Structure formats: structure tokens, C-alpha cells
Length: 141
Image (cartoon, rainbow, N blue to C red):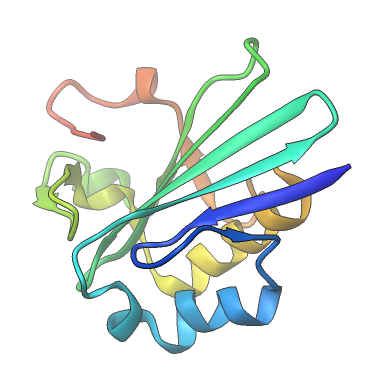
């Protein structure tokens, strides 16, 4: 049986969050919802498969997404917007120091988050990069 758990920046865990509510959090109410300084996590479970999408925010740059799953053969994936800004380090609202080139705008993040909620997979509508492929002067944690 498939289900999701959303660990929001504030409040209690939401099991099987509906798509419309998540869209409001990601796109419609982006700055209001995420301005409290916390990140979030979404967990996806289906049979013997599980995946996690960690979410960090910078109110000027958007979302930084970190995807991982229970398949040991599949590498961790990080959202990527601009490889040319990968050595420009900024801080997320939850205190992470991350390359600005890993932050994607809310509309793009929405596509990735919707796909994750529906399938537990990384969306093909955004670019991803594996941590091993990042330049030495980048940050993703």
C-alpha cells in the first residue's frame, strides 16, 4: 500500500497530504509558509520501497531538494538550477550552507514535489545532480 508522510516546517506530520494543499505551500503561499526558518521532509512508502525528499528553502532563490531512496544501487540526487552558480554558497532558512545553483524556483520545485508525492521518484521535469559530480568548492549540506 502506498502512502506519504509530510514533516512540515511547523505543526504535526501530515499523512497523505493532498496535492492542492501542497501546491498552496509550495507555490501560492511560498514566502508566508516557509519564512519561519525551518525545512521539511517528505517520505514515500510503497511495498518494500521507500524514498525521502528533503526540502530546504532560501526565500530569494527558492527550494533545494535532496532525493534519496531505499534502492542501494541508486545514488542520492540534488536539485540543480545553474551549474555556473555552484560555487556561490548561500544559507537556507534552516541554516544549511548550500550552493545557490542547487536552488530551484517554486514552480519547478512544485513539479518535482508533485512527482515525488505521486510516484516516489525524482521528476524528469527538473535537472538533478549527484553529490559525487559536484565541484570541490560546492556545498550541499
